[in-house]
Image 1 (cartoon, rainbow, N blue to C red):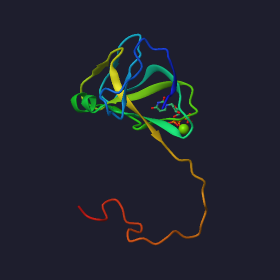
Image 2: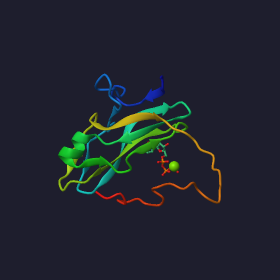
Image 3: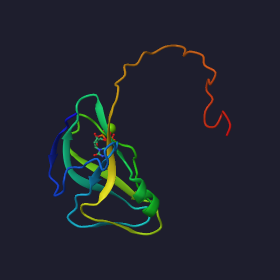
Image 4: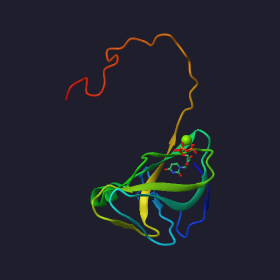
Length: 143
Ligand SMILES: O=c1ccn([C@H]2C[C@H](O)[C@@H](COP(=O)(O)OP(=O)(O)OP(=O)(O)O)O2)c(=O)[nH]1
Ligand SMILES: [Mg+2]
């Protein structure tokens, strides 16, 4: 599937790092490094503007390596990029470690997965169908 894109960053377009990867790694597009102290957050620009086909969204997700090694994650994960969004794709990073982390220009800070989605129409009713689960949740089936 083709996705229209304008790349205003100084970096290559995000790519799949292996043949069957789901996520395209997003590069930070920064004039200077951003330092995130413990529990600090920042909106990191990518320099990308895109036009997803209607019926698709893009999800911005953390990279597990950065999360594991440095406690760096995407605060609103999965971030949602709507098909009608024409602004710059940005990544909302947060440092959940107790050490500062330097985000450098060009670094692959997150990944983006493009996914199909539905739009629903509501059907207001008085009752819902009966199921075994009923209202059980939050551990109702035990460990
Ligand atoms: O991680 C993200 C999340 C969102 N966006 C952009 C694309 C998305 O289409 C738009 C709005 O995102 P969202 O609906 O999550 O934010 P909101 O707080 O509900 O803002 P709005 O009122 O503009 O919808 O912001 C990003 O670039 N990165
Ligand atoms: Mg919104």
